[in-house]
Each structure stands twice: as C-alpha cells, then as structure tokens.
Length: 279
Ligand code: C2E
Ligand code: MG
Ligand code: MG
Ligand code: MG
Image (cartoon, rainbow, N blue to C red):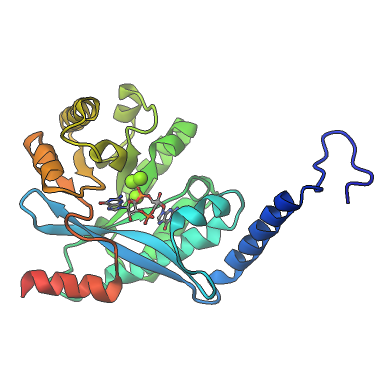
C-alpha cells in the first residue's frame, strides 16, 4: 500500500493506526445503515422551572448497537459530523422529535411541554434546512411553538450573517432557539444581541463546581445577569446537586436540567415520570 506513496501521502504501515482506521470505517459504515435498521432512539431529559414544575425536555440521541450496546452521542456524533452522514441522522432526530411532540399534544399532562432538539453545524448550514424544519413540523402535525432548536455557540460564530438570517426565517414558523453550551465559545455581547435567540443554556462545565469554585460562580452570575438584561430565558444544564440549584436560583436562573431532577429517559419512562408528577 505504501509502495508508491509520494510526499504528502499517508503511509499505512503502522498496524495500530491501521486498526484504528479500520474501526473507524466499520463504524462509519454501520452508521450509514443505523437509521434503516431502526437502531437510533431518542431519550428525553426533563427540564424544570424555578418552582420545580416540569416545562419541557431535551431530546438526546442514542445508538442501540447490536454488538456494543447503547452508544452515547459523544462516541458517534463527532464522526458523523465529519461527513454527510449527520444529515439523514439529523433529519431522523427532527422527525422523531416532532412525532413525539404530536403524541404529547394528546395528553393534558404533556401538551404544554417544549422539546429541545440539538442541531449540528452541517445540518443547519445545508441548503434547504428551513424547508426541512417546515416540512417535518407539518408532516408530523407538530406545534412549532413547542419546538426549540439548540445551536452551539461555536457553530453560530462560524457564519453569523447566515445564522441571523436562518434563525429569523425559522422563527417566523413559531420555533424557538436556544444557544447550547454557552460560555464555552467566545461570542461577544454584540453578536448575542444580533441573534433572535429565546434562551441561553449555561454549559454544565460551569455548573459542576458551583458554588465552591469562585471563578465559575463569577462566570455563571455574569452570564445570568447578561442574559436577563437581554430578555433571554436562561437554563442551566448538568445540575446535579441541591447546592448548585440553590446558587443558580438565588442568582435568577429560570430553568434547570440535570441528574438532580432526572437523567435522560426512554420515552416510556419519561411518560411514566410525568404521570408520577401528576399522580
Ligand atoms: P448537550 O446538548 O449539551 O446535552 C447535554 C448533555 O449533558 C447530555 O449528554 C446529557 O445526558 C448530559 N447531562 C444531563 N444532565 C447531566 C448532569 O446532571 N450531569 C452530567 N455530567 N451530564 C448531564 P449526552 O446525551 O451524552 O449528549 C452529549 C452531546 O451530544 C449533547 O450535548 C449534544 O451536543 C450531542 N447530541 C445529543 N443528541 C444529539 C442529536 O440528536 N443531534 C446532535 N447533532 N447532537 C446531539
Ligand atoms: Mg443540547
Ligand atoms: Mg449543552
Ligand atoms: Mg454540553
């Protein structure tokens, strides 16, 4: 294989490197078939307001692999984002989430819930994304007001002009927007004011060491103050302890998501969780 390799050509002579590449291409190949094989599933993590009332959920993708079991998105989303595999996956997630919104609309305990869906950069930038959102909502008879698209700070910054325009078009449908993992990128105050966002999501890395870690406490307090003055709803992710919740609450955070309340749940368990609240 390396026989006639010239300059700037990768030579695959390292057996461990070759093994890693093989694993990767096997995974890529399996990913291409995972939708058709019905191996993807969405789990739903409940979100709560500061009176501990459930207000919504975030849809989180899992891959039920026949050999490796349930695979977390961190182990296959980055790979699928390197190619167009993320496009059908992203569409499947949106369709499944919208079908779930429709199912929830039939029960008074779930009809008011909002559902957050993570959108990857490649998916958001693809031509026709606006139509996709519109079509998927319509085909599944889902209420756009209940759908929140989660974008990350880094993808927004990648092309601010395109982002502003797309958000505005999609918001006309009634869909909401959340800026995920906030604080991990470097968006400026002026950039934030130019985007028609509804919500900022404080990244869990800042929540982890609250309230003891002085720097994180300062950052979180500043984020909340800024978001509130911009009229944005603010949700903290990764809330694991009552002390973290209390700190966030005392600084004016609006909503919470994390293991303190619930882990992400398969839909049957999520529905049972909601029934339990109202029982
Ligand atoms: P994210 O959107 O920031 O999602 C929050 C992550 O935090 C989830 O990890 C969730 O399980 C985890 N989490 C929630 N509460 C706690 C807590 O109290 N403590 C800790 N330590 N973690 C908590 P998950 O499900 O592994 O997802 C990881 C990332 O994968 C997501 O981060 C998101 O960026 C991406 N992802 C998940 N589903 C999708 C999807 O459908 N499409 C795309 N494009 N990305 C997705
Ligand atoms: Mg998210
Ligand atoms: Mg996040
Ligand atoms: Mg995160």
